[in-house]
Length: 426
Image (cartoon, rainbow, N blue to C red):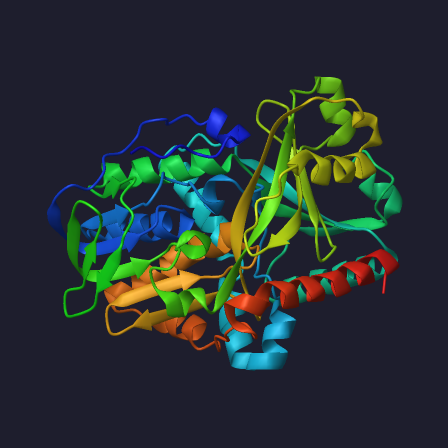
């Protein structure tokens, strides 16, 4: 049975609508990857460039999960920044992670350029401060990132930010000229096509039902199997119950996105004159940008435990109109939700099961860049170069308190606390 993508703007405007075959035989590979999202595709593409025979098993469609549904923004660093990492894990870990913190965006641009991927890639990202406290935090972020070698940053005051965003909502902003935005599903499809040109194989609608560990692990689907030297588990929020101990360390969370009808050039210039992408600094943040065909893509909010809200527009349209009241009455053409994976410490989880089953998950809202970085790290670890992997795998991985039953209400209460702080500006 063929599974369809969610009814998103991205699926409707995807360049590649070819359905890959389902696995129906027993095959072998150097590396078998579970999941054809960014983590799996980046890992597979890096490995294929090294000459490995790669097979990816995707339970649904390429980019079916967060990789094909996200806001499409290149946002650097991790969900926790290097100052937090240094306080909690020491200077050497912070230095090593800081050296990698801005690499994900570089990898994306390298793939787009090298493989001529058509995904509407544009430069420029903005962090917008909703109050003076957040603006002070952006000043600190600028100093912190510059200390780790990340330049091309510019602070904007309340008047300056209105030259970039057509709203009076923000107290100021941080412009990251090396940020950017793109069509996420077309990026995933482009990476998949590049992998296939290098000899890799992707099977869709081929959910892995069982993994048998050993010197040559074997992965079973409903109609076939793959025996490999190495396995990479890259299902993230859509892994399901395949490996329960990974599931217990993180929680799927949903975010909602809407897309307007195409806007006139005058409207586009009024909303985002420089065509940068924007995210605000609230804990439950809003994010928005223009698509390649001139629509406003606006997302925000979080539902814990991967619930699917029944009325996405009623959740997001009021947020959009708070930022851009001039869009009142604008038609919404698409609305959808997608899941990302949250960890307790909001840092990614890397690890190895036995000697040859690797995993990376839990990017906690920073998955676009972190997943592409993960592909480089995992591929090098398989090759035997484990320095970066060892750093990431050294971070402690905690189970959510209360287990599966109570992790949702506990986390929602914590989010409510931070949301109130955002509103009060404290």
